[in-house]
Each structure stands twice: as structure tokens, then as C-alpha cells.
Image 1 (cartoon, rainbow, N blue to C red):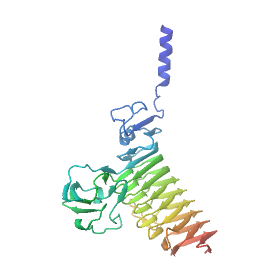
Image 2: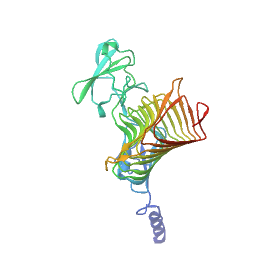
Image 3: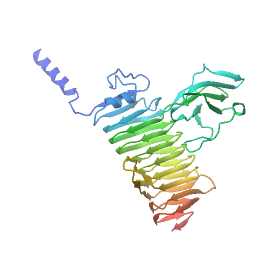
Image 4: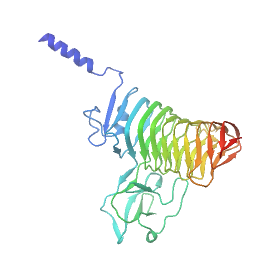
Length: 372
């Protein structure tokens, strides 16, 4: 009996996580709770809770595959952390309840709602987002409620905290964006890897990367239908993105200040004001595809390091990438006087070049003709 007890005790010690040993944390959108242990059998309820408990070397798993999470995660001062998204979606929108509406006429209703983060109304109508022509760079007046068509909305601020949301049409399936991001960072982060995770319907960016966060790796992520960017790196951050897709945002991606970014096999499309924007920093696009609906397909301009207040002179290398307009109209490709651009083996179609800075081109064509 003593020998058997000793054997079982030794086995128990063997399976316990050793101090400093990497751990796996599980989050379940449907059955998890934050009082749980975070195991596969007893998962957490929120990504934020798992992220705060995770230590360097740990991995967070989101379950079930493809689930919609109505939450965001802020990673602050985290190091050596992996998030496996399992194709889950972080949405910034919450459903609007059927009750609490004031009926103005047969198909026109309004309700008082809190002002969203950044004060930007973004309505989801049965899965399709509508901003009424507004975005981070476009500020149009909302139509009078009486002028609304089915599926449209109007926004009238009441004070700094609430406003009237007026909608014409069916109230079923309406969602309102309330969260600023799917994934956000702050402070000093190092070696964060995010796989198979998607962010949509944020009032700011799908992936909002701030601080001094370096070695940020994103693989097979999408950021779409956000009020600002699908992904945006700021300050002195450094991001590496592989097989990403960014569409239906104000700008597909905008990496600014003194941030560095490197995109491989990514797609950018269907933006409002610009597809790819780099302001300051060092950048690379390799085997990427830009299908521009926005007036500007690409822009490389100077930025500013907010910490040192020094001007950041931008550089970008573009390798085996394609830029084209999504229709017969030409889209802008901008290089300002302080930028440096190297084009290699790339194809540009229905693109208007505005090159003021230093540039070189090798094995590149513009509308089928060798360039330069």
C-alpha cells in the first residue's frame, strides 16, 4: 500500500506544472467564467482575465472555434505570450434590445444610447455595418430622421454622454459598436504572437497597437468594418503581419509616428479614405495585394516620434506586390519629399504616381509598361 501511494504521489508531482513552465490558458465564449481555473475543462470567460493571469511563455486558446466574442483585450507590459484565436471574432458591437424604443411612426423608432468611445456611431444592421458615410476621416451631417430610408440611421447628441439613435426599418438584428478595439496594447510589450484571430466593428481600430511594443507577430488575422483602421501601429511599435486581410475600414492599415511594420502575403481593400498609410518608420510590403476603393492606394510620408519629438523619415520596400484600382478610376500612390521607396518586381494598374522623394524601381510595371 505504501509503495502504491508513493507511485501515485510521484505521478501527481510529474503532471503538475513546474514553476516557470509554460502554461496553457483556455477561454470559452459560451461556457467560461472568470472564477474558473482557466483549464480546458474549466475555462475562463474573458480574454482579458486570461491575459492578466498569463506569464511569459504561456499560450491563450480561444474556444469554441469561430465563436463571436463581444469583448476586447488590452495587453500591457506583456512579454513572450501567444494567443491562438481558432478563427474567433472579437466584435466591438453589442445587440440593441427590442424594448426601450420610442415609436415615431410606423417604421421610424428612436432610443437614447450612450455616446460610444470616440463619439462615433457605427450601426450593424443584420450583420452589415453602416456609418452613414462617416468615418475617422469623413464627418458628414446626419440626415433628418424624416429623411431616412429603410436601414439607415440618424444620430443627434443630447449631451456629452448620450444621444438619440433614430432608425428606419425593422429593429431585429441591430447592433451598436461600443468597444474601441478588438486587441489593444500599451506600455512595453515584447514577443507577442497572435494567430487566427479576427476583429470587426470597433469604434477605433481592430488591432490598436500603442506604446513601445516590439516583436509583435500577427498570423492569419483580419480587421474589418471598423470606424478607423483594421490595424494600426503607433509610437515606437514594431509589427510583423503574415497572411492578413484588412477591408471595409476608413483605412486598411495606418502605421504612424515612428512605428515599423512588415507585411507578407496580405490583402488590403474596400477602404474609405486610404488603403495603406505609412507615416514615419520603416516598412515592407512583400507579396501583398492592394485593391483600392479609396482615393489613395498607398501613402508614404514623414512622421514624428512622440517621445523624442523628432521627425521620423519613412522608408518602404515593396516586393512582388500588386496595386490596382477596383474600378476604371485611377487611385493615388503618394511618396512625399522626405520618404525613400524601393519597388521590386511589382505591378501597378490604374495607379497615379505622385513621387516626390527618393525612389528606385526594378522589374516593375505601371499599366503594363516598364517603370521607370
